[in-house]
Length: 367
Ligand code: GDP
Image (cartoon, rainbow, N blue to C red):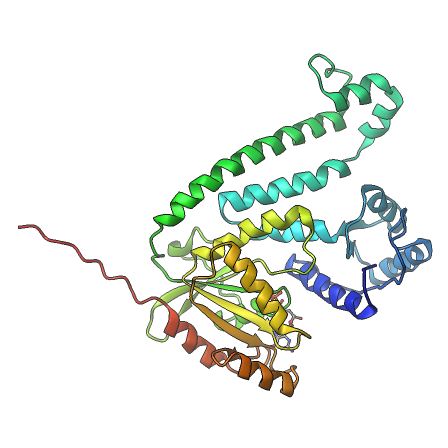
């Protein structure tokens, strides 16, 4: 279910499938339900739950991913009916952010968002127990208070209390990290090995391009790059210079509100790059709008002053008129197809062109 037309729903579902693949899932089948509003009990409605159950059985799927945010009870009901794990859009996006967060602040932001999401969804045998014990268990746990907790406290309540503690701690830590970051950025030195960040919407083809540019499967392993994460690979320029290419967390439409902050701080790591390769999907109905949205966010994380190389991908599938229009609009953009390989040499050359030249250290030698 989504607000808007069926085409909106289809676009949104395509994006969801791309997100699921990014998170490491294999997508088997998509199901769209048309409703005026979500069903309070099961989100998709009773009839559709049966269809979903049938699809789960016939495909052997082990997870259902729902394009929207499910209430805790909708999630539980769907899991009970389909007998498989149910994940909503928010949880999926959080999972991807967790994979992409590198900085201490990014990790803390993602963990905070994950815990805030988890808290109302925690459940277990303790829940029934506390309901049965009534006042002493449930009331005491929720209200806190010294001396109320103790042997009578259920596992669920202990968990909730721990999570709340962790949440307030994370909030305090994030606050102090913000101050540190501002000072750090001001005196940051350039990277020893030039770093190129690939940015753009989810599904624009960022990881396909990364694979094309570095040769499939060349994961960073040598000592020089030991601190880098799995989304970073090394590349060698034609003149032998080394540089790194990183896939950044993709932009997503309708980002759930709990994770806007986490997204920002994960993306802030882009500001540490020497060059941003901004990938645009040439087959998207409104590429200009996507570019504007990406620029707006890059500006918010102070990554807008970095050199940028605009790359229009999927030229094999894009419409000729659109490509002509985009060429006029962005004369400096490189037009490529990660699938056919078209434009890749040009792209490599353009990246190398924009890499910072090796730093020259000048030292005064005193007599
Ligand atoms: P990311 O989310 O930006 O990393 O995008 P992916 O690299 O995962 O690609 C998203 C989808 O677009 C996948 O289904 C790719 O197969 C497809 N795709 C990527 N590059 C091209 C291309 O050059 N042409 C076409 N037709 N499809 C592409």
